[in-house]
Length: 171
Image (cartoon, rainbow, N blue to C red):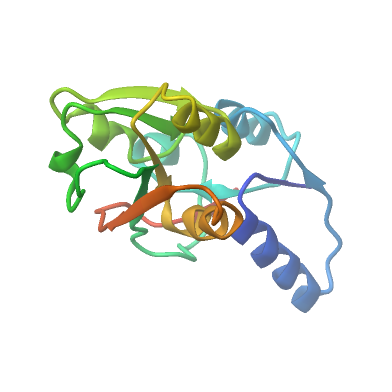
């Protein structure tokens, strides 16, 4: 059984299973914080959920070799937000971020940043549209999918390079 909450990882799992002639079942787990416990409890066999193998997570579970390196992130905002070129430019902003996103620790170190942690990209976009936050921080792979689906909305985005660890499957 495969737990997945990341579209890129789902497609990769499907391709790998096809090549290896393996069957699989996708089991959505709605809360990011429940992913690792579900694996530890053997409710799933693999976590395919856009996970970065952080030192904290590596103390709990094993990871595959990284299949996506050093992901950049995107800042999605309504028009009028100042240009964002690096993390420190986020100082003083209220930001939406998805539960479990590994860049959270870096954002928490920036003076004046307030984070609103939300379960899904749709929740974050709603928070942005309703002015609960000034911007939404999202990983590059997810941002590319989101930006295609929200073309009609008056939003701007900035790509910012990150020192993130990359992505791997949890085992």
